[in-house]
Amino acid sequence: MKITNDDEQFAVPMIIKLLTGTDETTQITSNIIIRIMNESSVCKFKMNPSRLRRCINYIRRYEISSIMSSNKGYYITDDEELVMKTILTIDSRMASMLQARNGMQHMLNTIRNNKKTKK
Image 1 (spheres, rainbow, N blue to C red):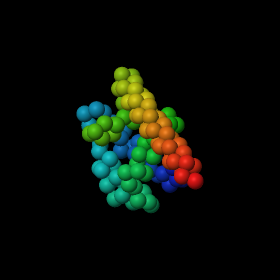
Image 2: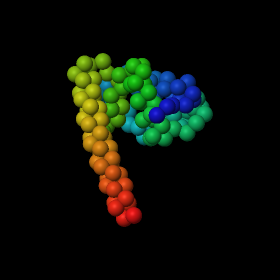
Image 3: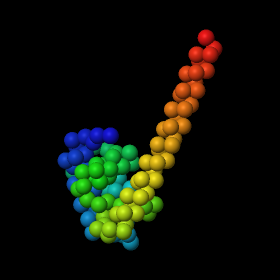
Image 4: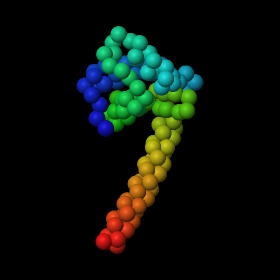
């Protein structure tokens, strides 16, 4: 998914600024990031969880910063092991999503075949 110009110009730099200096022990939750951004006079838009995830993905995709995530929040690291762990987690999620997609394709084919046999 694409991000908006506002996201690129305001949200992405603000997210990086908020997370600069964080680490595994000083993570910031998405709720706190969203609250800070929504209370800021810099943001002229409403931040929400979906928009935050899109911005985080944008930051990762364009190699702006190595933002990590866990069930405790977000943080920035240059630890090779932690970055590799995140890559493996993303690979696992992609594999699960592909399996779900293939299952849905099979169901779609079944639905189509059932409609053909009813005619």
